[in-house]
Image 1: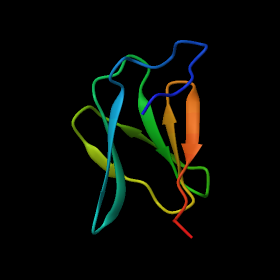
Image 2: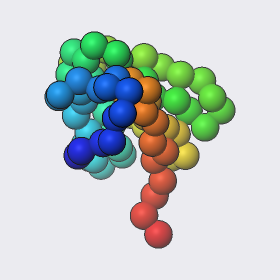
Image 3: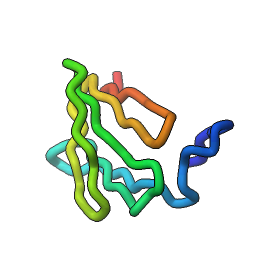
Length: 74
């Protein structure tokens, strides 16, 4: 996935994403500026390289300075 990053906060290969029976997950790939999962309540969990973290419905993923929200398909 290509993401517009004018501040250059993303690494070339920043993170991996996936979907399995338990839901959507993200894994940091050793990025320089980090990856975090932010819950709907605003609590943030840092994603460590090689660790898969589930993203709750309505939660967000922060990649460097960029953030996107996870929503179910209609």
